[in-house]
Image (cartoon, rainbow over all chains, first blue to last red; front, side, top):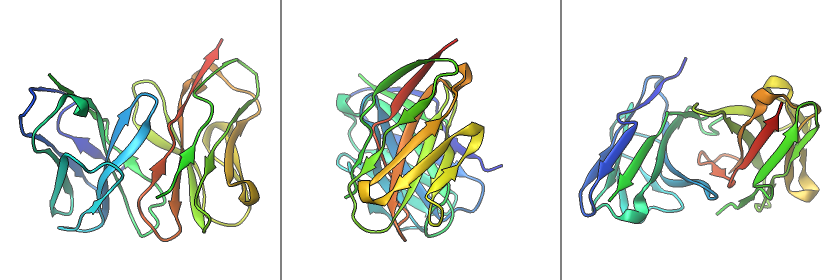
Length: 113
Length: 113
């Protein structure tokens, strides 16, 4: 079965810190995504990547950047963490142009104090 | 960008009751439609999807959804819910040929035994 692994389940950071969230998938998927999940707002797409070194902005890219140096790994970077970035971050991956099925990681609950 | 609306934020039902969760989207072109489910403490997972063909699609655990193009809707149904259906349900849409998925705000379903 496909596995999408997020490096941390819980993370606590201070305002202004640079934060790295790592995601690795083991099924050779071309497409990888970062979402944030907030109560009442559902899942909002931050960035996605359809190939190595390629990235596309989602709905809410401000304050975030991403890196995809290898096919299996997609990193989300908070350049200077702020309290409004406290959230659950979900990584997902899928295969093919139409992404018939997204596979999700278990999420990273980030708290910025 | 796509817009996906789920008007029911929290639905509470007794076991054996019938379920219908609404989903409407804004894009006028060809779309692919999905329902994802997140059981308590678990990853998001695919419940069912519509790409083309029969507008009535069946998914896992007795769920089905009907695509009504004229209404831009993809409502989720189940004739008789069980306590184990307690979860959060997300409708999602992508444009045909695109690989980024837009999610609704989610509907929390609580089934009372």
